[in-house]
Length: 175
Image 1 (cartoon, rainbow, N blue to C red):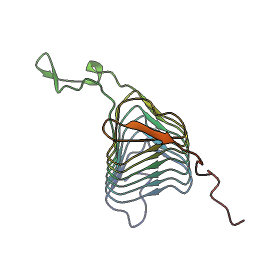
Image 2: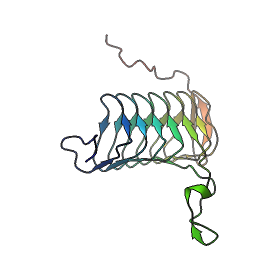
Image 3: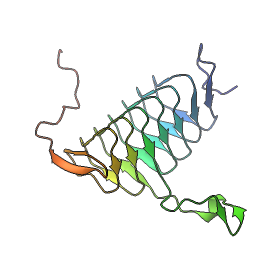
């Protein structure tokens, strides 16, 4: 049994090498191994987060999302449903007639900066940076860097306009 087994959550696979911050919520049908997830973050159902991934504080990772090795997600980031990250520009099953091993490919890192939001079913190509407070539209295929405070949409993702009034990261407006 994993040291991160949560009561009532019997369909999780959380490896012993996962580092979870304070008050992290992990829902059922989740696979986590070799990753770090910051305080107050939430991981929805049917999510896989691979080794070496770092997710910051106050992030929401929605259901059916795949976050592969090489991805760093900073604080206050929203990742919509069914988002896929890619970490290999030239994927192959075999090399010289034999199944590939970790030595046969290059993991290309991806960075999602603080306060960014990624829409449902977006695909994020490796080697890109999504800037602070940027918004990636649903079903985008992001192949290039996204500038801070910018909205992108379409396939491949294209700049639509600048974000005029970014959503404040301080959500406590009542007190």
